[in-house]
Image 1 (tube, one colour):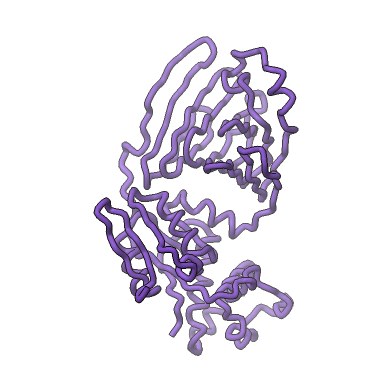
Image 2 (cartoon, rainbow, N blue to C red):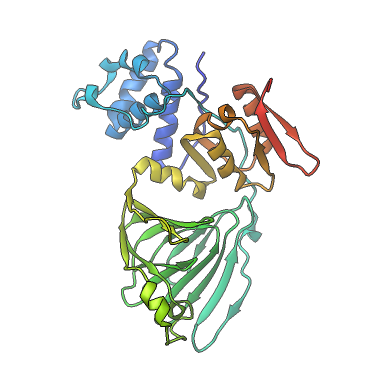
Length: 362
């Protein structure tokens, strides 16, 4: 019996839908496909060249390439499919699809909390927004830009005649920037300044890094200064800051970079595949998409969307279980059921509500 459990649901992103469909087909490889299923698979593969790429990557992830090769006659004849190699062939361990049958997290109209508006001779307007844990919210800004806040996020939006500033103080955002060449938009995050005119990108603040992913256009990244933070109010910069400021970097569509806040690590710009971009931005539709992360990594991400603390036992086998699939956020009860039934993982609920996970029999 296959240990892959696809999650059947409607998804907004074509890439997420393609991943889900690939998981469904791979889950059927442990048995022979019916004639009808073979016809459906052949039609799906012919519909879009990316479908075959996704199927090959998913089959590699689950170590199902041998089973898939038996169906090679169904592959489109216009490409040399026998030469294709999945990106996930390096996963040696068997991977198990974790499926959370969960409902949407309820997001009320109070998910977006405007806290303060003021007018000064420096800033025309300033508005603060925040989301609670497990919530996300999309805001239409006055300039036409679209700002989406992820779980537990706080931003200050400052607009003047010459500047557009979004000061990210906590959490994660995605922004579709309205084009205005005379008034660039700056995102400030932990001393980093990300500048764009008309583009789209996401920014996430973590403990020691700010992660930037550009989905459209190009942005400029540099170290911010007191002049930027105060919107030109502070004109004199210290000589020390000027000397240590790093040259600007340019990050283009389909690239990401982890901006180091410690000053100890190199900041390398990396290419990002379309499927990875879809996975990283799936939170905007209330989903989490994993593509072979360890259970420890998956639980850490899931924990961002709930106030429940989840601890894993000091067991390397447990922590290194590989997971992949499309997830809904917020349903801890459903999570525990799936962990028990599909992973043989038990849980204990502590007095303070913390959930501790371990392999059954350990």
